[in-house]
Length: 250
Image 1 (cartoon, one colour):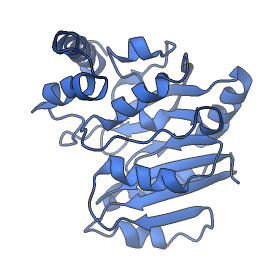
Image 2: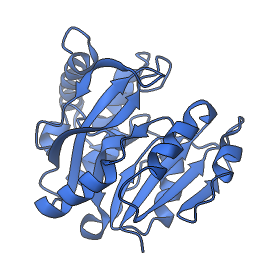
Image 3: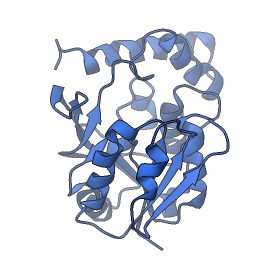
Image 4: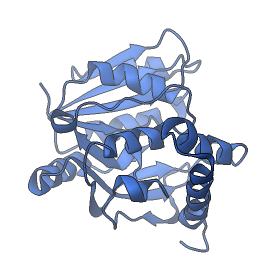
């Protein structure tokens, strides 16, 4: 069994996939498995992945296009590593990411940890200031803003179990982290930048249309809060999101 399972959904990522692949192969820490699920890509993504000659990499091609959460779940079902971490097919890790995160998890006896990450344009050049891992994360403070990014976080599946992504939510990563933090008291910050996130103007995470409604449903449908309480946390999330991505605050 590998110590780390890396979970990656892939959908039409051929333009960036080779850089992402190289960032994994360049990791100083080598005891990992990489579970990639292609979500019915129509470009050369599958062809690019199949060219890699590395027994640690497992490619699954989904039978239907079910979205990133569904693709991640298919990989999670096959994961055998103690530590679970995520990397989308267009993001990038520095060579010391896994080494530093695993060492930190063990030293701190952490069940969940997250690091800084750089916020970049399509060419991986800095776009706004790095996101800072500067606070311990709890269920209560994660309700107001999602400080956990998939590409810079890791959790201990032996201690807390695997946490799957919910079907039907466009904010499935936030719901997943909230459900995970119902099980553990705190996620710990590692204030070092070891990952790069591509900020696509057209990505679902950056679209403003219906995003407030989607976030409201995180609280109303998945946390089962009252209408008033759901709108309260939605307003807090919106304010914190503006501060997180606005160049005025970065």
